[in-house]
Structure formats: C-alpha cells, structure tokens
Length: 392
Image (cartoon, rainbow, N blue to C red):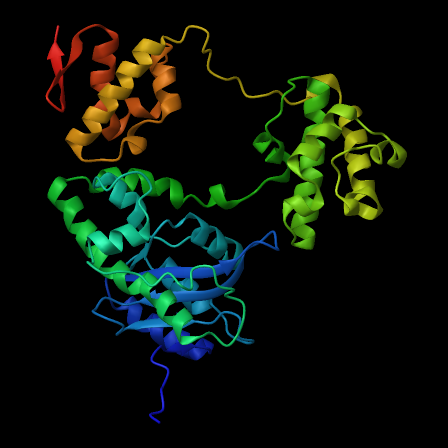
C-alpha cells in the first residue's frame, strides 16, 4: 500500500513563522485568513492562521498553528505593521478584531476583497465562494466548513479547506486590483477600508454597551439601570471569557431594567433569568447594578439617541429613490447597499440631505441625482427593462 504524506506545511515554531514572514516582507502582498471558535467564549479563540505569498497553487502557502505551546505570533504582527506589504483578507472585520485583541495590531495597509468586490459590482456582501467561482473559476470543498478547529490533529481535509481560503484569494486580489485601476475606483475602496483599519472600532466600552439593546422605554431611570446592567454584563463576560448571553440575555436584562429589583428576593421573581444568574456573584452583580442605576442623579441619566423624524415620510418619494438608486448602482456597476441603505433613502424622503450618500464618490454616483429628483429637476421613465433619467 502506498504511504500518503501530508502535503500542507504547518508552522509550529516562532522561528519557522519568522522565516516565512521574512519572505513575505520581500513581496508586494500576503493573503491572510483565520479559523476560530467563539460559541463558548467572549473573546474569539484563534485556532489557525492561513497565509499565502504571491504565486500559483499551494506553493508559498502555509498554515500557522497558534495553539502550539511556545509559538509566538509576534513575527506575524511585525509583518502586519509593515507598510510595504499589503495584507489581503476577505470579509476582514472578525479577523481584524481577533488580531487587535490578541496582538494589539490592526493589519495595514489592508485590502478586503469583499468590500472591493462590492465596489466592482459583484453585489452586496458577496461571499468568498462566489468570488472563487466567478474569478478563480474553481469550486470550494465545503465539507469542513462547520468543523471544530480547536481539535488536534487536523485532518488533511481540514488543511485543504483552510488553505483554499488564501490560495484562491491571491487571484481574486490581483483581479480586483486590476479592475479598480481600470475603473479609477481605488479611492472609493480606500474610503471604505479606512473604517476597517480604525482600531477604536474594535474596542468595546462596557459603559456604552447599553446602546446595543433594543430598549422600549426612553425613561431616564430605566435607561440608567439598563446602562449599569449592560456594563456589568460586559465586564463580567470579559473577565470570565464567556458569552454575554451566559451572564444574562438581552430580554432578561431589559426586564430587570423595567422591574428594578433591589434585592435578591426581588431578583428571583424574574421570569427570564437563567439559573446561574439567580444566585452567587452574577445575581449580586445584577442587583448592585440596578441599585447604581436607581441612585443615578436624573441629570446624569443617559438618553436614547435621537432618531430621524419619520412623521413626514413621503413613501412614494422613498420608492422613487429606491428605483433611482438601483438604476444608478447598475449603471455604475457598484453594489447599491454600498451607496445608501434603505434607512438612508427614508431619511432623504423626509427631507434630510446630510447622509453619507451625499459625500465623496457616492454623491457623484447617486447623491446629485437624488437631490435633483427632490427638487423636481428630473423624472424617471422606463424603456424596456431600463430606467432612464429624464430632465424636467
């Protein structure tokens, strides 16, 4: 029987990683992906890093095992800081958050192929598999998609799956880079990537965590309690490295902000609390948070962010703007969602003219015509399957 050998190189020492990163530093770009687990922890558990140098096939592509004792990712973080090497990801946000938490670094310069694909007209939040099929003319083996990446040893199927996330990414990156140059839209992409490389977007402030809640009451006292409860939950989950929902779920937190239990006996009457939240340090922390919220001076209570006034929403105009956006996005060959959201269009129909759609390249593609439509300077007409803009 012929003996099979592992074809995929796995780096398990800091020295081997440093040697690879030295090679990468001599090239124009490196493709990067990660495999991680997050279901049972607050912070993502980094299980694997995939890297590939420019080239073809599996050559120059490696896996890095960060779970090996003694391996330091500092050579990789140094590469991430190298301004001469572009770091290429697909749908980078979660990967960037992991590297910011693990190493205090946000890779730069950055290229996100999902964002670039939206700029180049591949649709809204296009998946990696779609780009592999359309650009690299290949198919991905999805059998290992839902695998447990923390288990060792990795199977050859897992390695092959993981490596494909960076080997095809090279061709996708080179194609999209050429397309951006051809269309003159590189600056469009840079405006989007500036948000991804902002390190502050990966820092969670416990005192601001309440703003993610879907609160039904705008009362200052209720909001003050919700703020204290959410801050306690965030700090406790971070300290114990457990999911927020293991401390207290959103619906239970909102219930406590409404019922305002001052004692453990009051807390025990909650219908929605998990068993672990009815006793011990979680229960005590929840009651203390409620008391802090109740004791908050009225002038220190938070307020819900002011929403746009939708009382004068012209729904017919909003529908016209949706038609205009779709037509302009198709004409420009760019994802409509990247230009303006449905909420943006409702804002415009309410008379708000200061959104992101009215700045930069978005204004040129859509914003100017949207304002002309509002002023009655243009109309929309249909000819066959095309929407045309007609001066009035």
